[in-house]
Amino acid sequence: MAFLIKRPNKTPLGLYIHVPFCRSKCQYCDFYSLATKDDSLIDGYLDAVCDHIKEAGELAPGYKVDTIFFGGGTPSFFGAEGIAVILTTIRRNFDVDDGAEITVECNPDSVSDRLLRRLRAEGVNRLSLGIQSDDDEMLKKLGRPHTYSQAVMAYQRMRKAGFRNISVDLMYGLPGQDIQDWAETLDNVLRLNPEHVSCYALKVEEGTPFAELKDVLNLPDDDTQAEMYLTAVDTLKGRGFRQYEISNFCRKGLTSRHNLKYWTGGEYLGFGPGASSDFAGKRYSLKRDLQAYISGIRDGGDIIEDLQEIPNRERAGEYLMLRLRTSQGIEAREYEKMYLLPFAPLEEVMEKRRRLYHATQTDTGRWVLTPKGFLVSNDIISDLLLAQDGSEPLKKL
View 1 (cartoon, one colour):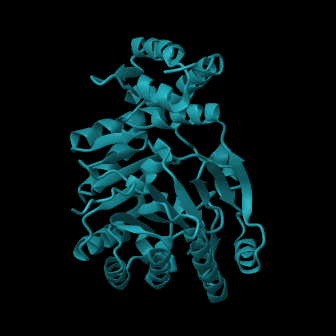
View 2 (tube, helix red, strand yellow):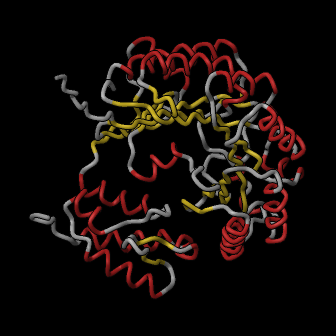
View 3 (tube, rainbow, N blue to C red):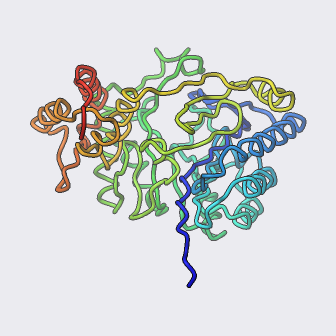
């Protein structure tokens, strides 16, 4: 009689590939990217990122890749040929799940039928389209290299190519924007009927062109931004979208599985200059310098900017900070089992927030923030971290 030996399941792993090339830099962008189509740089990047993937694959035999995300920069500007080479390298060096979610970020101006056909042929099954606004004048102010009509056309091409999981990115709190402008943007874009919507408030980052113009940008004040946020929550809920994270909304079952790894403590490996990883208990980021990345991979030099082994209490704090961004929230037994710290001091904080309508508790005992709670989440998390810092580890469960 033959006996089946049950093998342990492999640990899920996400891969992020940072493509650092754009047609042009947006006025608000602080991500590492270069406005270039220099073939020598692109070829050097492609060789380096593929060699990096080969090296990393040897370190992950006990993992199964279930999400792959191409971000940037502008992966669609980089092109389908390079993406195809990277995907082939990944499949040769990692154990990739047959049902893996594979996402590619696209800008409307660099979407073509040829690009989409190739991406589909390579197994890409999710696209993220950076629309940002339906107002052409606003798009110019933001430095976006496309018009709204190009965004609509790109979306229609995606549907025609057979993509059935499309996310759109929108921004609010823009220069001179008011509540009515934002409501109209939501209404217009939702007519496209995407599966997923990300709504981000404009944040003026140091070192960007907008930072130098901050005083004359005529940005909405904090109260108006908060009202815009709540408008998005109500509008999207009314159109059948579920809010599963502060800025993210989806049709049933169509969350961004890759991004959920960041918010729920999953493991991921990043490739390309500026990419970050959380793998095997360590967190690190790569240098934000393409030439340093290329030469480091080629010559065996150091490409890591920061490497940390995260202590248990800090991981516990991240659990609170990240899980409360999501609809999953936090739960006493889960927290105590994972970190061997008492939940009771945190329960007191959440009870106070419940009385302020900032938090609620589900039927299963999980604490989650309300939309109004999301608006003051930094304050809530600060209170939770103070309560956690004053707690003694549990001796036993």
